[in-house]
Image (cartoon, rainbow, N blue to C red; front, side, top):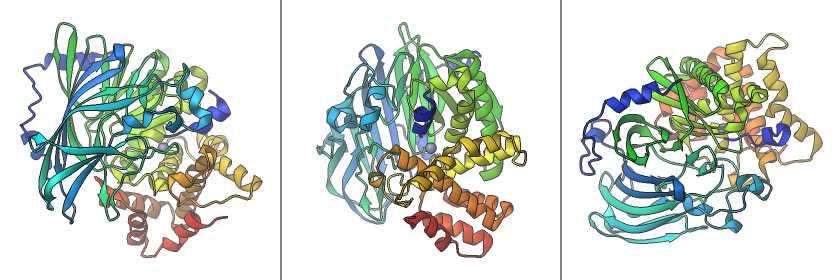
Length: 502
Ligand SMILES: [Zn+2]
């Protein structure tokens, strides 16, 4: 995410692989008590098991969720907190969209989304819990006794999710049902304690830990589901199919459902990359852009470790959005005249698989850490694929059209606060956020690259990736990678870019 400025300025194969999997059937049940398949992957992770009944007619999900939480902190814990992001969509006056986006977020008028619990248990007994926060978007479960480091709590939830009629990360429109941030997900406990930030209107206001997931979705037979993780099997019923997914070492689980999806796929190394689309011609192009990005970033940063990556055309009104192993791409970018932006957005969201997906960070307080690096990674892709020397190359076109110009124009025209390092809620609007976090942030990385040289710069990215993958990184981890590679301290260099007001 997120390409608000595109819209402001440029207002914008077959399902063979899946059918094959239908034959790999068997009585595949989500065994709530069978943790073995996760524990063999990583016994020190929290795992989620979610059983979903998807009712598209009513825009509703009926869910049963088990969370087998592990306290991986050094502190003992007395309460456990979850984000209930669907509740951020409950009240119009507290909407997650800035006022100028409301008409595009709700073309038919405001439509509420929310989550209601019907049953909540802790270690097999009725749980003591409250909902709290700006939009009742935080769930607090009180523990009977403190949970010591290394101990687990077993949480059972039954709940209903209502989707808003809205073409956003969470909601549905004519072509797709977009399920981002749709289930209760654990808050992150770090040196600040529990992070209970609400769903801010700017940026990607999320922060989560790597976990394991087993998700089964019962959906009407005519739906195709793209998701995080690997499709293990489809149980075929008379009217409904049950799709079984497993996702290992990911920080979130998202899915998109549609009756209109066609798919194409390609294999890059150990990864099958899928394009899901309802606009035929551009679906193949999206696959090519995604596959090329995967190949280039594997080379530049380090290997993408998952078996699948899905590029999904969605009813999504602002550019694109990244989730682990799945990116939602604004359906209107698949129109022929938007081809240039389709490539930019697909590549940007694929780069997020490294910066956000694998190397995570607090996207509320350190949003530049993944966003600016992702923006600059997009430039690296263009340099690698099309060459950066030629005057009229696509690389040069990106520099000319992109947010770098937005920042320069912004800087020249206003006496503005140019601080990049600030929490999401301290940015005025999307224009300021775009100009500073993406624009100035990418220029900062370009300057770092010039200063240390291409070879060192790529070594830094590889080192940063290798040392921080499957974790949440801090800015200091990036500075440390710079120092490891070059033998010099880069902190003041970065800090000047990050903290200077102008
Ligand atoms: Zn982004």
